[in-house]
Image 1 (tube, helix red, strand yellow):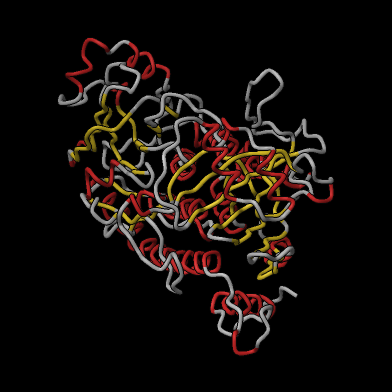
Image 2: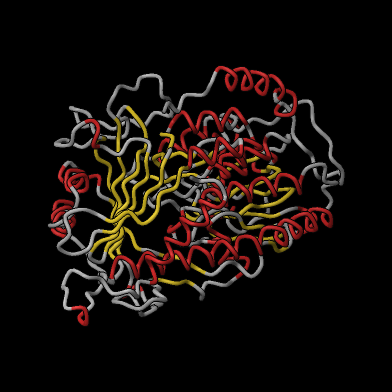
Amino acid sequence: TSSHPSPHAAAGMACVAAARVAPCAGRVDARSGRARVRATRRTASSFVARTSASKTRASETTTSPVDDARDVCDVAVVGAGPGGLAAALALQRQGYDVRVFEQREAFRPAGVAVFIWPHGLQHLKRIDPETCARVIAAGATIDTIAVERLDPGATEPEELLTINVAGWSERMDLPPQIGITWARLTDALRAGLEPGTVFLGHALDTVRDDKRNGVTLTFAPTRSGAPAPPAVRARVCVIGADGRNSKVRAAVFGDEEDRRWGRRNIFGGRGGKSSDSPENNANVYYALSPNPPPGCGASNGCLNELRFSLCDGSGISLLDVGRGNLDLPSVDGSVGPVADATARDGTGQLMFGTTRFSEPAVVFETPKERLSHLRGMFTETTDLISAAIASTDADLVVQTTLYERNGAKEWSKGRVALLGDAAHCMYPSLGLGISTAFADAVELKERLENNEHDEASIEEALLLYSQKRGPYARALQSISRLMHSVLAATAETPRKTDASSGDKNAFSRLDPSAAFFKMWQGALWVFGDR
């Protein structure tokens, strides 16, 4: 299955490109209390120049009001992840002067990938069809999702659940589901923004709502030692899309105490204890490898598929993330993610990810030690998993922790609103984070569209956005927690033999996790997945 856009999609992209020239050429001016588009637009290049020339006054701008027009915009988005970039894209299409501020000083490829559900791409398509087509072309379409379990001593995994995602997309007239690396995804989203929209090296320090004058952001010195960039004033609003450890959420809403680490397992087993301590977390390892991995035949790879295997305390995901190996090191060691599918050959890349639900926190001295530990986890597993681990480069293994936090009690306060993981960081068990963030961006766009842009109407629009999205996101968080518990129970609690039968190979009838997946498969059958 090709992830290239169809000729019809290409024609649609051309129409959309022509239609968006006029609104992108202007800027909504909120200072007059009504929507007014200026004929001339302030360019971001002047802001870049001012940032580099501000060393002598950097300390002053962290406390002084922002008076220079070059340090003023309509909307300031904090965080250049998928949610923040989608929100910036949506608001730029409405004519807002948007700037995105990211604390990182460079975009670097990393061995982490994600999958995006069809409804998530449908939300992105509502924002900008051209960017949606670019994102699809940068990844791999996922036709099938499979969940399997490998019991200790077994040679073949048991299939617990199979979802025909391609069939669902076709029946519902939705875009495909895709697997894509983080680098390719953010590259494709940034390509839809106007040049000079994203500013790196802007680590948020303070947020101050100046009511009629807008919201002022100040920034801290960079990690590399450069002085703090000048303060920025957003006339319309500030969007906090800065992830699970959101500084906007901490500064404006002050609810840092609800972070959750570790494992939740409502079915018991080794993961049965809940913990809010990072010392009792679940370690997560990600890496990229060729697809199919060396040692596997071309037909034995993981093409157009997401496969989740559960065995011996681990959840192991194998995800096709595209063709061309563009994010893997070349012969000279260089890595160059490209959000373009034109140069693909028959090979591809595969994300290997594993969650150790009960492993204590562990720190490794070198990447090789981390890779050696990863390989030691799996001595009896499927050939595909073994080959994927064996072909992994030590420098491409990323280690993190499984993490969630309760949804924000409030998503908006004054002219500041939260979006994405900053508002609803959830377990990745269902892969809903990015799709939900794209839905947030659509709702935000609709609430700010045709707004009068006075203080009261902006605050009301952001409040309505919060009231609309909050309950929906909380429901998805609850479902993700349930799925996390099921996966942890299934991975960490092998089926027990029935001693009363005298047959050591007979499994006990009580298997709640397997029953859960069978019920899910049955529900899919009822709704047409046959």
